[in-house]
Length: 130
Image (cartoon, rainbow, N blue to C red; front, top):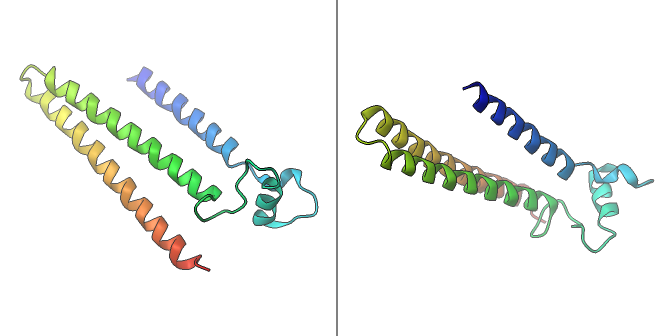
């Protein structure tokens, strides 16, 4: 159990570090342009950086799409893991219940993430429409 907790903490810290590097303020290297959108504009002076926070190619959209992809991958991995648990349970009712719960929670997590994505899209499209 202790090894699993250490692995979880290490993975969480790695993901936070990755997210922190990904979301680092773009305006730090740009003088004279204030605010977050000004920083995005400064970072967007190159051709590879997005120039908007929201919209089809915006930073916010890219981050949300990445997180949704990540949650989808984790959910599929957990569903496969639950299936393997289920097939190797050898009729043990405790293991079967654990496998079913793993599959159920992976599906619930996937549904919740899709609903969260839909809510965020609705709110951003409603309040940020031009």
